[in-house]
Image 1 (cartoon, rainbow, N blue to C red):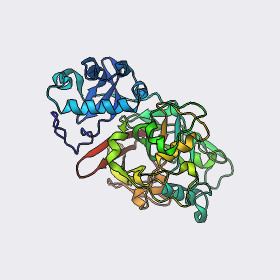
Image 2: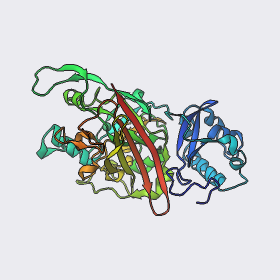
Image 3: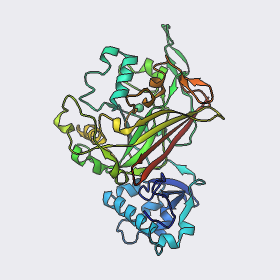
Image 4: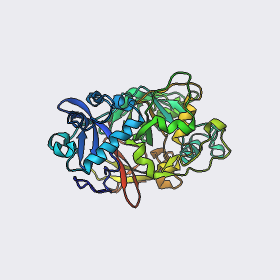
Length: 409
Ligand code: CA
């Protein structure tokens, strides 16, 4: 699409994308939208009258988080997006005429966590991942537990430790049971891992006692981000029975700074894998509810080149977001704008599509080869994990930016 910034349709942040984030401006934390190598300061864009034709209160763009804008509702998310696309293709627009003040270089901008996240839920919705973990942690012959094909399995995570891309992650301490030992020991985790996930952001607050049916669920989703749900496998193995993940998971999760709207993802809908056996009626859905999103993970040792160690795709998900949200609320649990719900590790069928090092090294049995000659099983101090996500077809590209984090001792 022609635009006066001449941003290619195949740029990660093309005019077809326009993801939302929050950056540190001279006015403090400010909502922004990415376009090419620039960001649009939404507060200044509003001050210059860009959104005067829209009826919502423009003070939402003076907030330090996106929650207030998201609260204005889906019709306004769409109207703001359309307004920006029109302004970027019109050399008489307020955006064009005031570009010197409204546009900021993206590379020099400091991005921050774009949301107030009240609650974080982590699902476990990739059948390949659940099968691989079941084989390693439990019984290779019965890797999937009996409930797995009936329930989008999930647990309540910890919102306080979600950080924005670029934040260093301290190696967690904890209890582990060393191999052959009968008593646990305390110390730094020796099996720090990433989990390649996508997160969706709740866009509509619900009342306690109400439910969200699958056919309405997507109206309750603002957008999606690339999400690294850091994990400590040795701590996990000792602590997870009987109530599931705790300290092995809650020390950190890294979110990309950009939230891609569901409207931008619309051209990349795809079918899901067939669910067998048939799911209960409240989990049934119609139409294409999955999305074709390419996913990549790089590992870079300190001061060394990066190696792409995983290439996966969001389309492998067994349970879709509509089912996850329907299940989450079917008991009357309320959700709030800004809640983050992550997919669970996204693995494909091929060995190079496994979305965690636990699977890539098959529980420590194999080495993961790096370009510089080193090998890894789990993450060492100084290693940086970079996750990328993008959709692409013959006419356009939609990029999610990156989730970057370095493990430090
Ligand atoms: Ca996870």
